Amino acid sequence: MTVHFYNSPYEVEVEKDLTIRKQLLDIIIIKRYKDSGFNLYPAGLENMSKHNLISYKSIHESFTVWSLMELIGHYVNYRKQTSKSLSNLLPEEDYRLYGLTTHEPTQLMGRLKWKTVSEGVYDIECVTMNVRLIVLSKIPKSANNELWRLFSARAEVVEEAISHYQESYRKSEYSILMQQLYEFYIKEKLPMTYTLEQFKKDFVISHLREIPTEEVLKQYSLEEIKQYSPKEMKQYSLEEIKQYSPKELLKQYSPQDLVEGLSPETLQHLAVILSQLGVNQIKNQEQ
Image 1: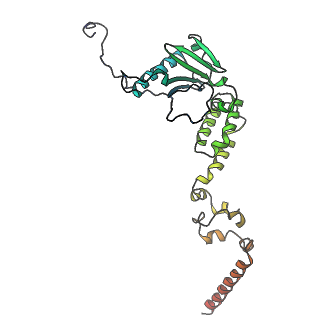
Image 2: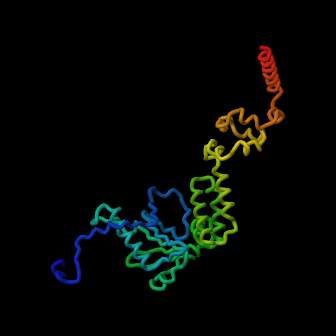
Image 3: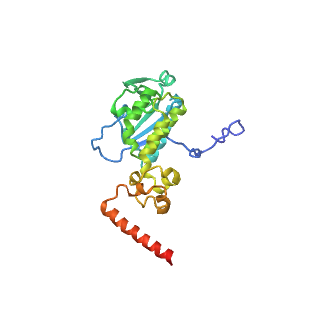
């Protein structure tokens, strides 16, 4: 080939390394264990296999013919990597290809053969592979489909999905992802009724206990702290407010505040201490 195209406008490169440019596939879901009764499959993923390759196109993108070709290219490369050798590839049925897209890709569906699997889910014939296309804005409401509905870019649908996940996510490390998703939709001017300020407030309250108390207290001055009565301050231990000296804290309250709620035994013990302090003070003055 090199000799044939010598002295032509073309240059021949042999065994070209195609790994120089990084190729990133959005998601791969790998089956690591045997079936254990899991049945929370969102619409379109009911046919998952051992290796499930997913390409995702969000609110401003479309799943095009090129996107489909790119996904198949990822599959070819990934199948080579996960097989023992090129002469002993894992079976084709071990792999599934999925395209996730917010909006229906009319250009793609107008050029290729496809069939409807269920509402918002389509199978596209492509050579020997079947690519499943999931249109997120068309997925119907169900407990298993709330994941897809989070990314539907339809305000009322997104809010329903967020409320579905809110309670469980609020108490987990994944709640930050929900906040990022919510901020993205606000930025894209999706008309959400549940405001970002409300979301942030709920997020902070639910995670406040995860932050060391001393870090929280550092954000406030003694003037801000003194608005709380000793009774309200009982929810914090001395260990939690140890960055402030007893003298600094006690001077914020009146004698009545300080003794309110103390038991008779404690008050009697306090009277003895105050009496001793008074005697010692008189002796010091006499000396």
